[in-house]
Image 1 (cartoon, rainbow, N blue to C red):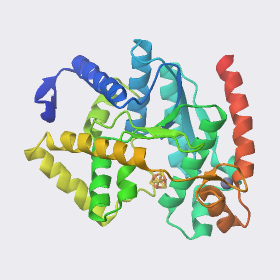
Image 2: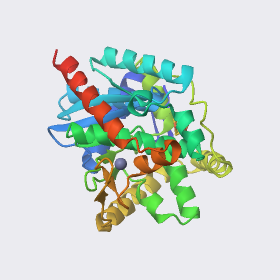
Image 3: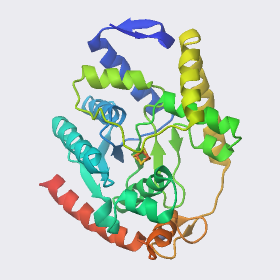
Length: 317
Ligand code: SF4
Ligand code: ZN
């Protein structure tokens, strides 16, 4: 039996799967995340959250509740055995679901692995990683005309990020924590179908559906002191006020939709690679130029174009 405190119910495995998938569907419908005929890239890390996301979306497609094409994508960042193990898991889960994963190799896109780029840039590795992942997925999305990129972000993480942004009065970061960050210029929109599900629910779903997932965390994953405090504060709060998180997330979604609809940032194409930027040079070209002396956007785009052709040929085989 699985207890869902905020809904005040306990479910057996079979009914939990139905509950979980219905909740994903309700989120997709309520926030209009996916429309009929959409092409959705599902960003996979190999962890329980993204694996649960892929499986739930596939089930909803198979049952006819959603009409979309899924493109599972994994980025090999060059993080040694962690990347290798995650890639194996991604391949295994895609095989079990009858999907072909697209494996993007950072080394082939730039000639370098993540730790080398981070070291040369002098920036924290997670911030460098974020720029790289956003860029590579955005280029793939643009080239294959994807409607959106689906992320496995769940309620617990999003809520602690939101509280941190509130405490730091970072309105821009707060607005991006809703269920959807719409497309801007040629940047593909980001969707979060697990917006109203908890980390524990993702874990239970992955376990009861017998999905393979990586139990290891990225060797660089470290929460800041504030993030740790906020996460444990929220878990304690949840023990007493179990429905608070869900109502907070629904309010956050309204605010995020309102402010992102109002926002009218202008984007210019990057002078090196043509991808959207605020200043005329995109974050990826700026990062790689600073770290290596030459912007890697054009090289990465070239690599991704050939990878997409190769991927499409294997999918159509
Ligand atoms: Fe990237 Fe690892 Fe940092 Fe996550 S924890 S952002 S995968 S470097
Ligand atoms: Zn660029």
